[in-house]
Length: 123
Image 1 (tube, helix red, strand yellow):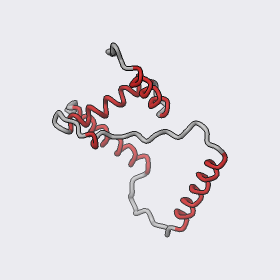
Image 2 (cartoon, rainbow, N blue to C red):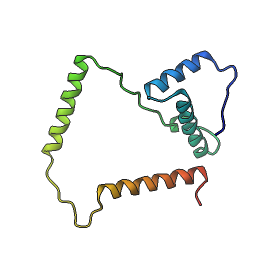
Image 3 (cartoon, rainbow, N blue to C red):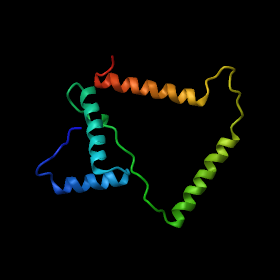
Image 4 (cartoon, rainbow, N blue to C red):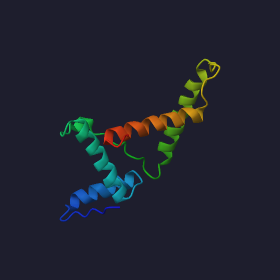
């Protein structure tokens, strides 16, 4: 696998990358690949230009530990969400409807095919 070395990498940029990688539970190498992959996807989609709004933005990862108030707030919010779900009317799954594993497999295959086509590797 090729290695990438960047000379004179600005310290502030490296620190921001380190914090971002830490927040997303990735190594700095993994985060660099992730960011470059997103950027290049937007670059190719834009015909060689990047519309910054098109670059996917990662959601910040939650802190490693929450305070008691934050935990209680999240627990209440989750309980309300489950109450709303429980209040929904029941529904019948049609005869012959695919099993969940089959739906997931199909979605993965579709996603992988789209990714390969985007990168020009599809046969």
